[in-house]
Amino acid sequence: MSFGTALIVGLIGSALILAITWTAGLPRRASHRVVAATGWLWAAGVVGLTFGTQSGGGQAANAALLDLSNPADRTDFLLNTTMFVPCGILLGVVRTRPWAAGAVGLLASAAIETTQYTTGSGRTADINDLLANTAGCLAGYACAAALAPMTRSPAVCRPGAGIHRHRTGTTGRRRPGRRRRG
Image 1 (tube, rainbow, N blue to C red):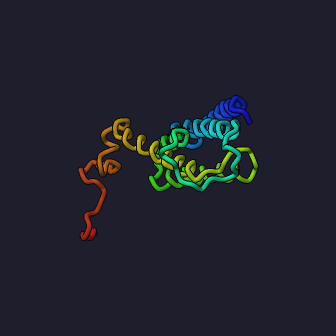
Image 2 (image 1 turned 135 degrees about the vertical axis):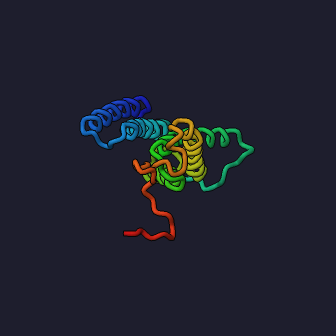
Image 3 (image 1 turned 90 degrees about the horizontal axis):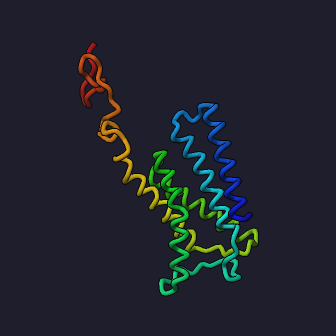
């Protein structure tokens, strides 16, 4: 699949996801609907970039770790890292846990590398791509987590912000070690 075809599939799929989720009202948060549509577009772009170009130098697999003295290896590592940053940002927006973001990056990358190896696509399944993609997902998640306090209202960021005060002035929480009377 060429990158252009993947981009068209991504745009059409994103529009369909937005239309269907908005009509159905699910998920309830509009931001999650936008993340789902954007995630589809990102995934289509990754497929187009991954399988729409020939690369690999004829090897089916590469288990050798990154050679920092080789500029091509450094560039490839940086590009693979950058490709997965949006995934981490999207996972950060929906407030997943850091370990889950790392797991998604690792599993998505493993799926790509396994597909490259098993389909004979002319691409090399590379351990460095797996590491770079996972690092990119975690870097994107870290960026989203770092920016989150600036995008939310101060009440959301404050510990105990989800507790609402009753008219009596109490929080509705019992203090540890105390029994209710009555």
